[in-house]
Image 1: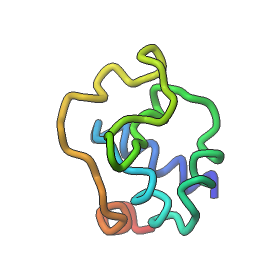
Image 2: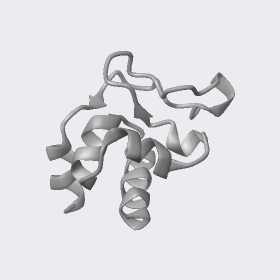
Image 3: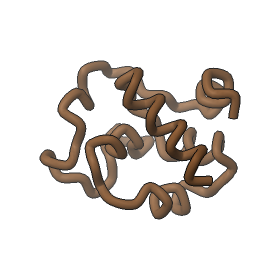
Image 4: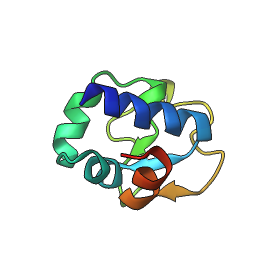
Length: 88
């Protein structure tokens, strides 16, 4: 599972686009709460995973957020995007 999470995290960091926990969790076949636990520490690399309503990473301070987190308003909200682009 950690390998798949790493693939998704690396992809989001490469395309510099936020993704909802729900979309990522569905693509990975886990519940959103489980995904949050599996992500581990609040790091800039993990801050691309965001809450559906607010588009914000849950519980992150400004220092823990990626400096380019808001470079685009686009947020991946569908697991289809991840499964299609990453072959999950």
